[in-house]
Image 1 (cartoon, rainbow, N blue to C red):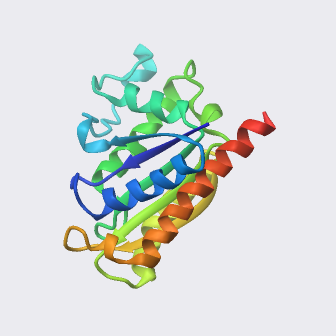
Image 2 (tube, rainbow, N blue to C red; image 1 turned 90 degrees about the vertical axis):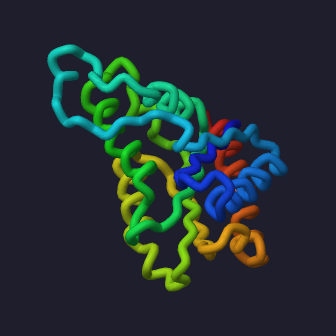
Length: 195
């Protein structure tokens, strides 16, 4: 029963990371094995859309994408964490989702779509503007992606951004993130039981 946190901010010590850590603590306290990956620590190239993989059977981009894909497939639940940048996900998250195309279309041996099906998915976002409407496109982008991959979306927490440490001062948001983590562990437990 594994919960994977995907940290999509380039600020390793910022509010996005802080709130994800709270959620992962909640998941661990509820009995889940947890792991966090920081996308900024991986070399994931932009999609070339060259379609060379159609002829060669593999992507010409030689980067860390296979490592990240393996981690996603090993986990039962994903908690995606991103700052709201220009009203959507960070570039780090977007580049990763763009590259899913390679695995969906041209790596049938991985069975990416089949293996993602039924996994739990949740979202943590931070933004300076506290109007929930400002995060609508970020949430929509991810929810539509989860729907395409037939993942089970089960929660969203929006926290205050800005100066480092801001989010940890917001007790209500911290509580919501912790509960999201516990919910992630419960989801993973129920998925294991139903298999």
